[in-house]
Image 1: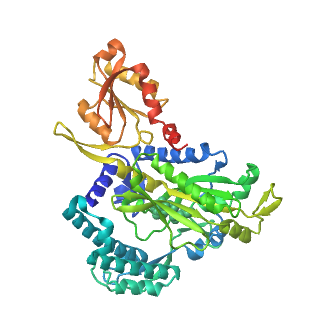
Image 2: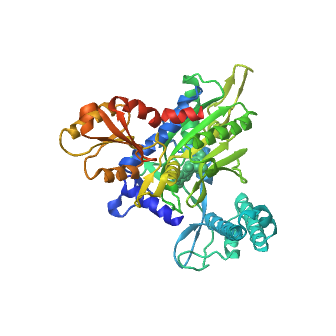
Image 3: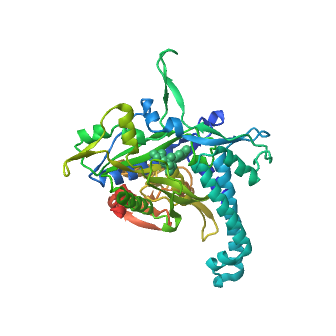
Length: 511
Ligand code: GAP
């Protein structure tokens, strides 16, 4: 699976989806740029999310808050004091790690050992293999499971108690070595705040420290009153936002999975206190339906309910997607109580409440948050779409089986040759259709090669203009997935393609 992932990363670069940031200077750690195809795919993902929130829900509106916020925002939200990662250094390699990630990797090693035993036995016993019975009786599986459970319990407790010494002791007891030096020469564990700081103001004396926002959510909370009043919003209602967030991640790995500059799509749903768990459960289902409408298979998603809840949350779950490197969090859904609004009320001195006309009382609403990373979503789409295929004629192709509605280019138009008025006819088709969806003109190379290039960027339809087109205004329409070709009238192209490639086609599936 590692090989597949490497191929996906190089495919992203080769076909203009994702480049390392400042590539000519050899890149900048955990920062990436989206190329000509990447930006289109990313915009389509954002549009799918935005429309599913704002278009399909009468009681959800959007905002676009600034990245810079008053510094007290982050004191109130708890980020200044508690948005930390526990860090540990290896004295020999001088490399820095997240202590919790080292331990999580160790947990994954136990899982791998267990899975290996299961796979071996499944192969040996074939159809008669009973996995549940094997898990319950096999000595090696039981031993590893017991070690894993004990480690998990100790680890969760250390995290809950914020016990840095215990985290270090776990690393020593588990004999975890530095992947670079191979030694166990570890320093103490220290807390490290993930927020980036900068200064506003022109003189050193007059300048004040501000932060690049580590989540977009706070921009919504501080605007709760503005939106509720000006939009005359009645509970329950939501505020949605898409925007950049910044975190000084220490362990940056897995390409765009963990970045220092990334984008979030967050929605805060304000509800009457006491109804929040019902809404939490509704939003879990709604968000899972949004993911599954993409058609990647229900088996590739799962909920991961949190054992360790943040002090302000009374329920939390992640939606995980099956990436080539395991099930990983793509979205978080959190029941955040009234913590954020109450904190901002306390720190700003403003009354942040809702007057309920039905009960004639004022209260601080509770909040359900749905928070998804655009880049992680992009990665999951890419990972699922990337396919290497052996064709019946002995050739092979790489095809991105992107949902048509997300594909960067919807239709490629090729003149069969560069003469006899075929290029002009092809351009004419594009001129008409480009108002409706993203089209691309290609005349270089053999048709077969042009098809392969379009397969590699996930373009769902290709049209070829030939001599017959000049006679009867028909073209060959080729389908990316089936590679089937059929003759259709130019006049019918729009109606055949438009519905399949529009975001509406996805939205209808979740309505
Ligand atoms: N407001 C809640 C919040 O920010 P989070 O679980 O820290 O919660 C939400 O982040 C989502 O943002 C994650 O599920 C993930 O998709 C994305 N995300 C978080 N950190 C990221 C990073 N360093 N790089 C890319 N995406 C990230």
